[in-house]
Image 1: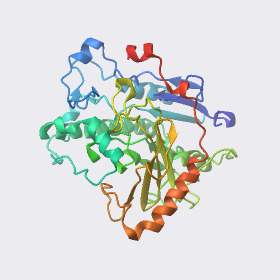
Image 2: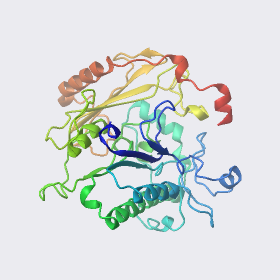
Image 3: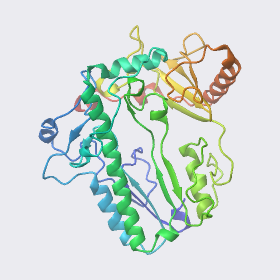
Image 4: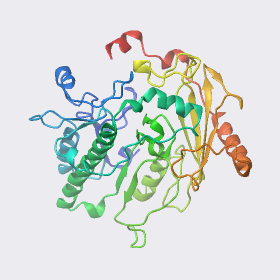
Length: 385
């Protein structure tokens, strides 16, 4: 859409799109592969932290000495392209990091080495059965307190590396006199559990997984808006309308979401993860994670408002759930910001739980099911991975 109104468009780094979709005029994904540019021999020689489970995660290790840090290819390519632009441009600089495998550039492991991270895993006795099952798959109990702190310190270190990459881009824009004519957005697609609810990754709707950074800087902002923080929920689906509004571009009718500078904000956001097939796993590539009784890993759906979060298992073993097996979780984040206590049975919340569940169910009725055969990887592909 932006290319049609005169912008040069480019992506550098990961897009995570089907191969048939080509939204950018230039798409250079160098620097975004999961292998971090390492040979199998180099990967196997890394000293890693990994829970003694089937996940085979690399949660904390250092990049080999004397080797250029592979993800910085994304930055270098973006800087080179930006420096050559003379017309309006839209560029997406997309880093895989911070993301498993956590393979840190040397030097960054020192930044948070002395930070007083919690050395204990949280109590999960009051979580949903789904969250307890996920904790069991992750197996963080096998890590020592020192390893648990290291996992968090390396993740924070990788986030600091991202900050430095953003700094390089800002420096170039400033050098070229473009900062006063460029809208900047810092954003992510999902968060990552590093022990919250004893989990790893993005499979839960706990805040550490569902919340993402969103910073928007527009040179035309009023002095009142600059540096302000808006404490309202929103979704990445709001970004197109917001960006087009800032650029003065007509918004296509099919765009959903809100223009976040219009003063109107969504009242709730939704999320869904998983397929809910009979042969579904929490981690399908390593076939780890089943529900008790060898049931398939569920599809989990969530509604979140400014104050409340409610999620359910909406599909298990290729069958849609009802109240008897949806394993509902509800929390008042104002009372329990850690989101580690299921408050669904408390009588004072009965009305709001009923209302949120109804809205979530109505939202789910709109879904379109993908044919089962299309969500399965061929056995040969799995073997190769």
